[in-house]
Image (tube, rainbow, N blue to C red; front, side, top):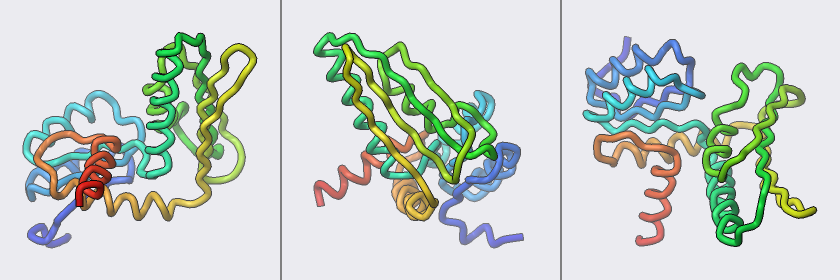
Length: 191
């Protein structure tokens, strides 16, 4: 099928049902895995965690560096508003075309996860490819929005290679997109 002696990295952005075969290949070949399938269930996360004891495993919901910047900005915004003790309502708006299977998307879950509670997530399935994600913070008659729109996947594809290269140099363990991008900017800041 393929030369297992020459595998340097596996990037899986396929379907959830392929995870067992992907893990088997990575386990047999001691190959790092960048796993990019949306919303893996707890059983899959447990399998990836087990593999991470032997090889580096990245579990990345969204490869885009602009999504990473948006999620970091959303977390910082929520933190600053909390420190100012401003009562804020957070909403994550998740728009994908009707072909998107899961709602909310993994990206929307990541954004909601970095915001202080309560967070409302609104999933819309309409419109053009690829996606739009907005974080809307409302307080005392004012609104602050962080918006990220994706029209093609070129940046995500190049990011997969960049994060994969970073992952290949990491110690065994489980890594998020935030972990990997933080390693990239930390290394580049000090070089």
